[in-house]
Image (cartoon, rainbow, N blue to C red; front, side):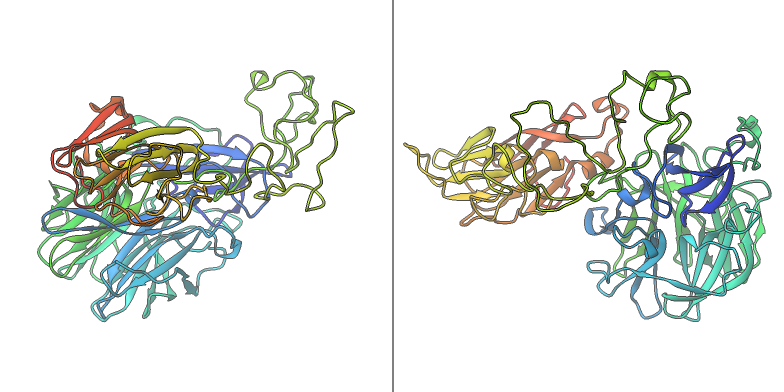
Length: 592
């Protein structure tokens, strides 16, 4: 979702990344990546780094996000259906045979060939289950055009699917301003490019369109992203009348879906963006757009004048939606970052930062990442703070002995350690009575429950022990030995506290590092029982106006928990709030 590219003085685009979120710039013979990630209300430059060409650098890039799929019932209840990992900017539509098709940017972790390509998935049970992602194929793309991105799906009356997408000629010698193009398909996987530009605005960046067929007319909407800076010119602040306009979006119409004519721009009140998708029921167009902290919805009978209507509390950006046969919606969108550099992310082992000429240090002057200035450099340390994928250990005492290694050569990213010092072993708690930072106790007068925080588990004694005896059951682990963290319903990550109802039937655990509360509706009878309900604070946050709650912070890091069997109370450390359910929750992510 490239919002705006500002060219630095003396830099020129030399290679497309296969993604609007980062491009490669050249200065002389060197290349530097610029990562741009769109925020809900604008753009943010996440960072710049040297690294291996063809691989994105670290940071909160789009590959660290997931697409979240929700069901919204006719009475407005929201439930989570599915997650498309390492994905973004989704669209969804219903095919002629009744199946659902979803398209999104695809960021597989270990497949560079498919990285940042458009992929599609299919569902035959109204979004509960989805096929594995398939990267689309597009025949007939013009020479020099990069692979399509930012997909929008429009079912046609004859059963075909038209894909509208952002395209540019960034692989050609003369880069172009991004504009909207299209391709046609009979199966949703194999597409044929339709020649020509569907919609563009001279001198301004047009991307992330939404298209809907309404009463024989195609309506195209796109957010206003402001002007494009000319290559080779220094960055300048555009005049006020040229900047992106709040609540305003481009609007164009067509009778054949190919030749669009720009008409009056659409407007919506408040800090809302025309970044999303639209759907028609033959009477009105419903637009699902991006708001400050949740999805917004607007309806229009003519496609021009939109009126806001109540929207479900779904905290995603660039949403898409499709109507359910019995009423309600399936809504999907790009969720917040869920992984960072390291495991699951893409760490940077590039060149060390630039050392300014004449400044002490070990790096070569003018080589590597540009430094922020002399303040970014400390005293000489012998080695740059970030080396090229190497860890060097300096021998400082003749009594040290070298530890053997199972793998010769340099360290590599994600390499397992060979041994552990000061522990029982990898994924080994040491047993049922080997506790590691126990933090919470609960009892119903008979049973005793305890959170063994750093072992990622809850220990349960059927009867409160009178002596040092092992617990009867464990939650969060399959047995008393293992202690790895996890995100599943059978797993925990740093549980803070536990509560049990007075009748001993229900158990609630604050799964602190996973930002959620796990609930069991019956007393467990064996190890590793899956939780019946999950209350994810990140989802619950979407239902509140955070400007007044928690000082603008989203809810997270749950710690204290209490219940009397009828009500439930949880302390959200992040967000500075106590969340209270006046009736004990009965469904996932039930708001307080």
